[in-house]
Amino acid sequence: MVFRQLFDPASSTYTYLLADESTRRGLLIDTVFEQFERDRGLLRELDVTLTHTLETHVHADHVTAASRFQQTLGSKIVLSKHSGATGADVYVDDGDVIEAGTASLIVRSTPGHTDGCVTYVTKDSRMAFTGDALLIRSAGRTDFQQGSAHRLYRSIKEKIFALPDDCLVYPGHDYTGRTVTTIGEEKRWNPRIGGEADENDFAGYMDNLGLPHPKQIDVAVPANLACGKRETASGDRPTWGPIVHTFSGVNEIDPVWVSEHRGAVTVLDVREPVEAGGELGRIEGSVHLPLGELRARVAEVPRDKPIVCVCRSGRRSAQACTILEKAGVHDIANLAGGMIRWRALGL
Image (cartoon, rainbow, N blue to C red; front, side):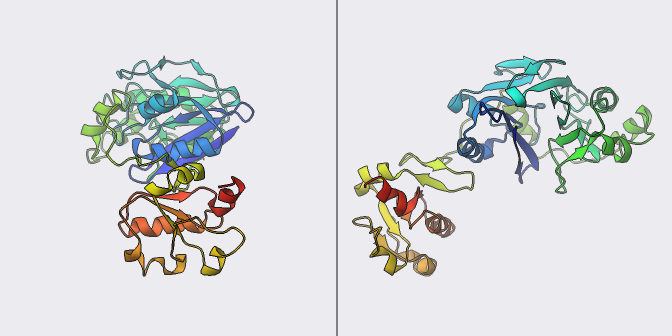
């Protein structure tokens, strides 16, 4: 099975990708609106066809990207039938299965943080995605959004702690950099519900946390009750050409398109002077400015057209894009594959 754990630093949210190794059909759990391009880039690079986006619950600290994936890739949105949300394609309850080959997941209803909290468990019970119900050495707060410490206690004890001790637990968040735990560890060491803690111990702990209200709750909850449907922020994706956003965070553009629209862009060649006269040649009309001099000479870069950076392989020119972006230059893309691909395509 293909598995990746992704992180959004703004909300400390983990997003998980699971895909069947042979069919390349996969799922995303707990996507983040602002990380849509990053995650789509990863899907493309790993050759994964996204079939479903799954929500562990209606989030209060970030907006999901579920609707963005639904609209662009045709994936189905999965939510608990108790979530109160509209716009999902599949509403699940305890015992339901989301089929994706080796990445298939079984639903366990685990309310308490919210009414619609679910935990997704792999069929072999080796991995559990607990959302905000069970966190690493912690548990989801129960002081808003239908929260109930008593319900959460029973959900964790009866549905999550019933899994094998060696089952890996992947939470919806962690605020200190921890990435994974196990059922056995949390049974023993979780300070809120582990060891000999009973329901009253847990409820007393949870009812006295004194946490501040989530900063994004007034935006996130209404949006997530509609599966993340909202206006995409302006400038989210460049519109001047067929830009592809890579998982590494670089905007790339296809050489064939650049060849066909050469008059509409400025090609910035950042190779060393000796390379421009080498066997790979140079693109006619390109502006030459070596990467090592770019920071000091950024004011010389023409800005009347979108800029396409190029080097031998596309690696140095990717760094050139980063330098230009930091200098406040917009409408930039890296020539995918550099001059090697340009020549291989006979351009």
